[in-house]
Length: 103
Image 1: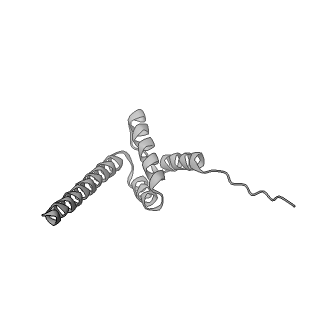
Image 2 (image 1 turned 180 degrees about the horizontal axis):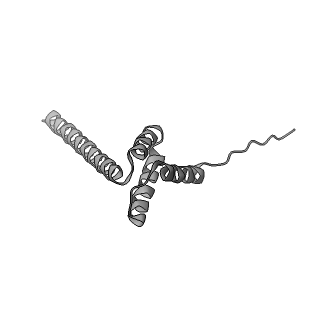
Image 3 (image 1 turned 180 degrees about the vertical axis):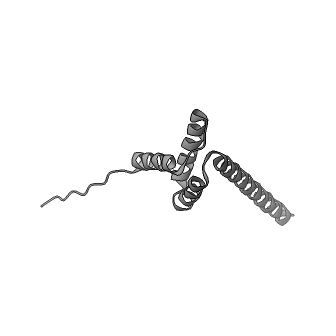
């Protein structure tokens, strides 16, 4: 009887995980469709490359691009996308420095 309860708990957790994964895929596809509608083809290809290389930068850039497209009322080209990506990268990158201490 106790084993049946444990099995049921495992089934519920697996079902919840599958539902969460399905929702994440749906959100990702919605974001891609929104980006496809506001970016030129070359800019969209570059965003796909950014998504593969740096997920956090992709999410931040997608938000910026969607807001900018609404504000200016036209599609964003690759040059404008590069400007957004460079600005976000510069903002998020920390400047590193190495210091040496002599004894």
